[in-house]
Image (tube, rainbow, N blue to C red; front, side, top):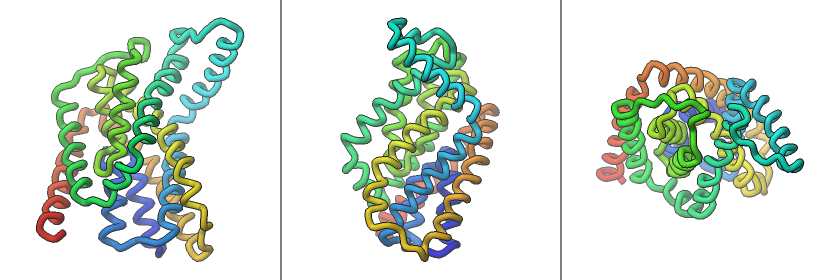
Length: 278
C-alpha cells in the first residue's frame, strides 16, 4: 500500500463515515477498482475506524465527558436501590437511550455477520445500497418535521434508530444517514437527531474494532506499511472532524437531500458497471 492509497482511503473513510454517503461502500469500491489488497488491509481498515472515533470524541467531548460522569451516578443509584431514575436529568436519559439503540445494532450485526460480509464482495449490493441511502435521505427531508427533545424520546424511538444503524452495516447504506433518518422519522428535533446519530456511532465503531481486531492483527503489521497506515489514520481523524461539523450545518439548514443526488448517481453507475462490465 502506497502513501497515496493510504491518504485516499483515510480521506474517504473520514468523510464518508459521517457524511451520509456510506464509508463502507466507498472503501469497498476503492479497494475493488484500485486493486488494494493484502493481509494488512483489514488491519488498516480497523485503524481507520479508530481514527474516525477520535474525531467524534473531539467534536462531542463535552457531551461524552458528562455521559461518563452520569454513568457513574446511574451505577451508584442502581446499587444503592434508587433504581434507574431515567428521567432524572437530560444527560442520563440520553445515555440510556444510546445504550438501548446499541442493543439491536449489536444483535443484528452478530447474527447476520456472514451475510453482511458476503455483501461487501458484491458491487451490485453496494450500488443498491447507495440508491436506498439516497431515497431515505430525500424522504426524510420531504416528509419529516420533528420537534421532540430528549425528554420526549421513548424506548421505541431508540430501538428504531438502532435498527436503522444495523441495516447500515450493509455496504452502500450510510450509517450516519440511516441513524439520522431514523431519528428524524422518530420525530426528534434536528439538532438532537444529528447529535444522537454521531454519539451512537461510538459504541458501534468501538464494537466493530473489538470484533475485527483479533483477525486483523493476528499476523502483525508489516513495518513497511507502518508509516502509510499512520498517515491514513491521521487523515481519517482530521477529515472526520470536518465531516461532522459539515453534517451539523447541513442538517440544521435542511440540505440533507443534496447527498441524495450523489448517492443516486454513484449507485446507478455502480449498478450499470456491474451489469455491462461485470
